[in-house]
Amino acid sequence: MVLDVDTGGVPDHSRVMICEVKLAKPNTARPALIQLRETVSRGSLTTPCRWVIASLLFIAASVLAADNDHWDDQFGAPGVDQLVMTIATNGNCVYVGGGFGIAGSEVTQGIARWDGTNWSSIGGISGSIPLVYSILAHGSDIYAAGYFTNAGNVATRSIARWNGQSWSALGVGVNGLAVCMAFLGNDLYVGGYFSQAGGVNATNIARWDGTNWYAVGSSLSGNTNGLYPTVGALAVGATGDLYASGLFQFAGSLPVNNIARWDGSQWNALGSGVFSGPSPVISDIKYKDGTVYVAGSFRSASGVNATNIARWDGSSWSAMGGGPFGTNTCLAFVGDTLYTAGNFTNIGGAKALNVARWNGAA
Image: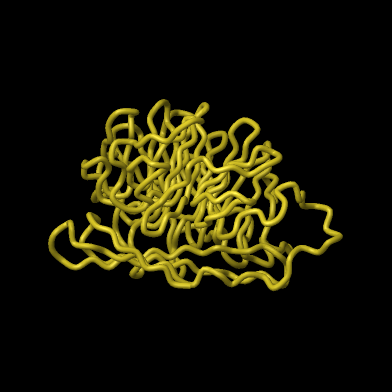
């Protein structure tokens, strides 16, 4: 499936971002590749550009067996009709975002709410090819980020706020793709692939204080192996630091290799970063008890052999066993236990089909 989109006002050079979507059902799951390609002719910033999203569906041939008692069918058939890219909870409600147009029997573009019994629309998003990449709950509000030009009937670019009753814009939003969000105090940080936020020059990361947009120091930039820079995951540290990760080489002129720490006034490197491998990238990042954990596709963390998962203790990187044999896309903590998931068949020499846990020692 190829989706072709025209838009304007984004950086004027060719860019490609590769993401991998992994389906975790033993023996039948295959990776799906999402390729986002932007081609912009040299010249005016108003020159139209084209986003191409290709090859979305390589889905397992069969559904979960009827006698599988591990999954709850409360969401009912048909759920949503297309790709879900993000999920979040707020109170008793579950919010999902992606590239779908129907949830249950409700027509709703890109975002929907499940209250435990029924699906409902919260106005949906619209645009040439509306997508929601990230949903973040903050207090009673829901923030949606992605690629769209309207939320409900409110004009906005790629990011908006839902207060439980209606949508509102965050200024004029960002002029490209918003991929991830994190609150630090009352300020919302947004990462992605863009050059401006609210008319302010801000390359791939920006801060919203509730009224205005600001750049976050110098740009996070620098393409790797022909893949162009994107901030794909954010995490907040206990001391108020912000960690940004994804696919980039520099914070301003400082070499950082796919991860950097913002201390409120400047960017800092974490050793020499995470690199090596065919297309080194960090897909997810988590912070817990003074340690930063990253998952993605890489072979080295500041010179330490580390396959697709590693941790930073504030002064040095270390490996976490042998790492997954395959790709690693996401992380989650339950108490002190770290879970990771992706597309792999073993991790650290132990058989594990696409999901594994780390108990602090193995």
